[in-house]
Structure formats: C-alpha cells, structure tokens
Length: 363
Image (cartoon, rainbow, N blue to C red; front, side, top):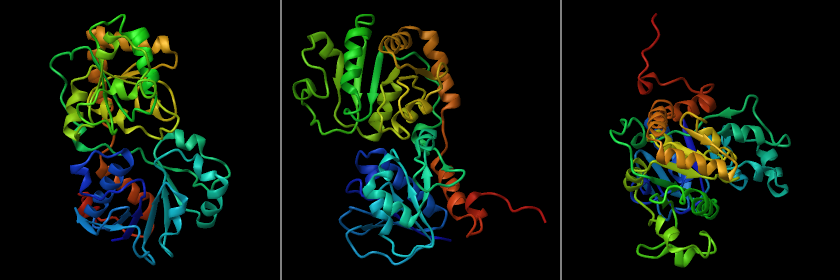
C-alpha cells in the first residue's frame, strides 16, 4: 500500500506509551491513527522526540533528531508548519490540525504554509469556521471528527444513579479555577453533600495537598474548609482509573477554553454515558447535544442550575445518561483511519477490501 510518514513534536513519546503513560489528546491520537493505518497494511513511520528506534503494533517510531527521509507517498505534519519541510520530496503533504489553526496565519508561519501548501485535515466545525481566508484551503475542507477508543464505547446503562459527584477531567489550566469559584458560590450551597473530583494530566505528586500548592493559581484562594473538602484533586490517573472515575460520576463540568479544537475529554465522558454541562466555547459544544446529553450554558448562574439539576433530579440524569449512550459513541479509530485514507490516498491507491472486510462487488 502506501509509505506514510507522520511527525509530531508535542512531547517525548513513542507508541508503547499509550499503555504505560498518561498522554494528552494529541499524542494518543497520533498513536491510534498510526496503528490503524499500519493495520490497513500501510508502511507507517512516526518521527517524534523519542530517544531510540521502536517497533510497536506494526509502526516504526524514530527520533526526529535523526536523518531526514527523502520521500514517501504521504507525509503528515502534526500541527506545526516548521515540520512541513522534514520530508524533502513527499508525493503528497498534509497538515493534521489537532489544535486551533490560528497560529498557521502568523507572519512567521504563513510563508511556510504557502510554500508547501499542505492539505489540511481538520477535526471540528469550529476549526472550519475560523479557518483564515489567507490560508490555503480545500473546498470542501477535509473534516473528520477524532475517533474514540474502544474502551469508552459500548458501555451498558448504569443500573443505579451515581452519587452526587461531579468530575473535571481536563488540563487544570483550562478554567479549573473559575469552575471551582462557581462550584463554591452557586452549586455547593444547594447540594452540600456534592463532591467535585478533579482529574487530568498534571504534575501533582501523590499525597500532595493541591490547595496548598494551587491556591491562588489553579484554585481560588481563601476558600473555607467545607469547599476545600468538596474539591478533591486526584493524582494523574491511569487510563482504567479515569474511565472508572467517569463512570462513577453523575455529571462532567467544563467551562471550556478558547484553544479547544475537539475536546476528547468531553467526547469520551459522553461516550461513557456521563451527562455534561459545558460553556459554549470553541469546539466544546460540538461534543454535547444541548438539552439531550447535557447542556450548553455561558451564564454562570445557568451553568450552576444545570449542574445542580443533574445532581439532584434522578429522572433527568437517567434520560441524559441513556441518550449519551445512544447518540454519543462517536466513530472508532478504525473508521477514522478509513476516512483519513479515503481523503488523502483514495485517488492514488485502490481500496484494500480484505482489510476493510468489504465483499467485492458482484460481477
């Protein structure tokens, strides 16, 4: 099939880390896409800040600091225009835009983008809407929502309503402080026994009191003891631990952030059947069906009212929980890879029907 090269410099990782380390959405998405493309019998090499060559699930992982390859059938640069030159003469060059695309039009980057004119691959309608007219584009744009891993898809309905526990499962720099302020002022007085569990990838060592370290920065200062007790910051969890925590939560709360280009944390919570109250910021509202699997609320008072309702109204929670399980399963990474392949390679390589398990057309 095709010789595919992917580059990403977000952090130091290789394919093995999907099972051994907590990863952000970019790194986990690169690994899952690379594995699925390899399963479809493509020759896939991923260059990252890894320290040594690694073979994993049919994918070759190589240090990006090594020798640059001369050519390939498809070269995919993740996010950064500076990576567009890494493969000297690929047959086709694409840029996988996993974050906001605004940086692509920066005066230091725009020349590179126009020089190489990569095919953009986007993840959300929000990215399509804010794509700058000064950037090269496809018409229509290639838009493929990120796949969801199988460990969050296909769960059964909860037999019992969870306790009054809310969950935050994103980077704590993404409006956790403001969320805790709303929690303390508008939610906790109405649901005194409620708990807000805070998860996410951070560097808080186990056993550390988050309030003593984050108060005044990632958490609001001068909070009374009952507020501090109700907000429980957990160490960075394993994948299995985070799924267990989400399934035990009654609602996911997230104020969003302007940098969100897809928001896997909300998408995965919804697939697990967790209703969500989110602010309509960037791509976040695309992950929640307003009034069906959660709510979009920009106003803090309304945001708090929705959170209180989902923690106290069992019938409302049940409706939204079961609606999320029905409607929010997303697409698998296998399907994502198929769409990716069709968008970027279908005109150059025939579809491998044996991999897709599609019977050949009748003669």
